[in-house]
Length: 619
Image (cartoon, rainbow, N blue to C red; front, top):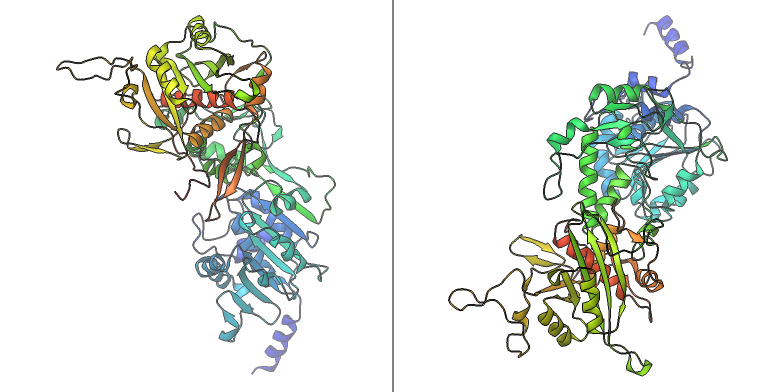
């Protein structure tokens, strides 16, 4: 060996490398994202909202970083970049890359992590020479050990101290696991933890971690007035700004949209001055390149504990039309009784933590319209006026005679509705008089026959009303529409009582056969759970029923009688369940449920996917 050259090499190896001033710049030169959908060579300009997050891996100040982001926006890449940089530059201290379970961790190791680490020259230089020290999900290097694992087993978070920790998909971690992970880092004064996840549930361990941090929000500069604001799909308070589109001429008869027509109307309106940006790649990209993170909104957070978030509408390579389509699909499922797509949409696209308290009770508390009073005039442009009736036998020992509870509502073509009358009715004559006084047609009157069934059938047959009967099942298969619905197809009421002497006489067709005339009384069997779910999601929609300020105290109490709670079925899935506390009246509430069902049958509101209750899910 040439001695002078050897001495020169030894001398050069003893000179420390120049300090890294930017982790992103280092990654641009050294990291290849093998298998990336957008660019194999790392380019921080593709996802500028991840820059600040990545830089914390080398700032020497941040100890905990929590990144709550929408799906498909480069969040996992931030963890991969941080891992490469820390392995390549760290003087020592073990590292963990934690996922929800071992299966997911090893799948990520095989598909991405190992490939990305080996494609990074500074990391490959520190790769174990002994092949037995480079195993699936485990590297034993001279200066540190790396473990890629799941947190499903609590044992994976016990034992040795860890200096570097990257935690992924915290929204699906078992409660308490993040605290155990944090405990592994307390022995190091220079520990670093990076949490990366979609939003989870309000007050869960991820939400608490985000709130404890600085709460920095990605802000975009308005091209109109120059003000910065956080882009959002929709304003929580219904205020100005957000994604907008024109539905005129784009909405089809079944309530769905023609997105080919809708696309040209999609735009983002800035709430500050109303400036409009169209849904084109160039305009969306210009917004991204003018953005930054806000100053901390949590002024009490220590500078070593940082957190960031943004919505998918700020990600320039996600078309806004796609977000609108996803939102519409989720809302249709929500109105039909399935909240899970809406929950996923909020968590994965709007980066919002799911608040279960908003989905308890019969609805949000009924919204009273202070400027509206009950009136026989009702809606000027109504499509139909519906009466729903619930008969009760009364309690003889309490001196209570049989009676009715009834609700009359108007419904518009767009699904809007207005309560016209509600209350208790003591006799058949009073019921008929109220219906006539309010101009309700007999074939738009629906009476529940669950109590005093035969007498209700008689009432309906004599006066042309429709009879309802409840069932515990969640849905019924409709052969005409070839799908499951929370109610059966209508059939003639006389089919329920063909031999009774008091039966309504059906129309006879040619040949003497009984007909099925549109004005004959109908019988409909409904899902008790399903009609409640329809009303629940209607009241959480953008067109909840309009309730006048002068409704009775009975109405207010009945509407608050039932509670919607989430319960686990035998498989562990969380499903909605309705319960009525003892000795509480709910009659007017069920009448409003029937109103929502009739509007659903008429195609004025909602979708049809009803999530069963825990008791029904395995029947």
